[in-house]
Length: 377
Image 1: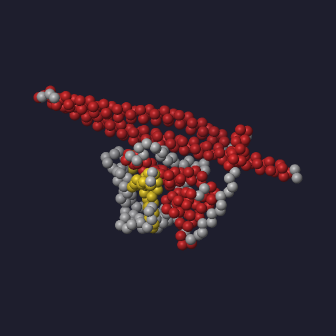
Image 2 (image 1 turned 90 degrees about the vertical axis):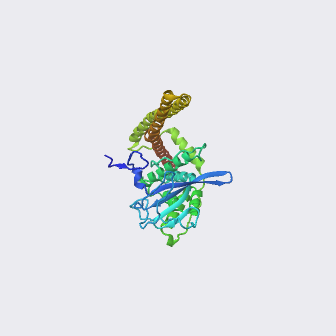
Image 3 (image 1 turned 180 degrees about the vertical axis):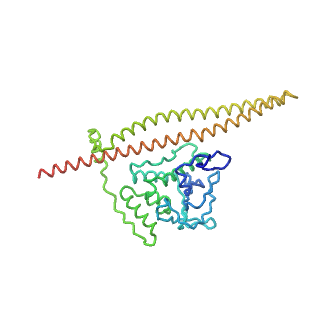
């Protein structure tokens, strides 16, 4: 019956296998809080190991897997770039965040680093549907429950990127998983086309360290953002965009996604209300049982015993109701929220397509104007 199920522990029901389970060799674990003056943040350990190496993550997100492996680690089985990082638990690391070896990778990354990867993927694979990141949170972001939930979602994000047919070989993903502290911060600090060139040079340096290629990063091009913005705004107002055979299909997709988002938001809201009401009923039953227990202690003989039993029964019902509410949250409310985040990712990809279409139309119009001017001479 559960041939396509992934077994999990703690007496939980098996869940259906998901595509990102194929990248279980990537784990996010060991959240640690850091303070730098007034700045406080949480770092996460990102491990990448060969797919044959089992991963063991405790309930609090601690990674207790054995990093000693013989097989080269790959983001994708078809890629021949071995991971160069390792970690030895019995010896202090040479760097603060990276441990290197041909078969194992372990780096420390914070949320802003994941956000950098997310942004870079949008640039390197424009038009692709990028898996969503967990949202930022200003309140209670250092609570144990929030940190664990964020750890789980960050791990899910990396695994989805690793199995994505358009993202698994992105240079930024390779840099995120393998680069040392200095290299990674250098990649984050460079902007524009220079960042693309530097990323390729970094990946070459990591893949072929013996050759030690020089990072020839050209200066960034002059800023022409205002001129480009005016030209694209003029094209957008005109509305005469270059058409392609797939335009009608994408228009229909946009309409479908908009309708789906509205309907999914409504279902998600009702699911959240259902979970909330279940928790409220659980709290009410607990208070109801507590009142009967106090009343039973004030009475003697059979009446007091009966009242206490009533209180104990209400307390048991409270526990069962809370467990059911938590199951509904995990199996119903959370997946619906994930669907909404994915729908938003699809809308972002469609928006990127429209922006590229607008840019192409603007450039084509400028070329036609220049050809017309040239023909006058």
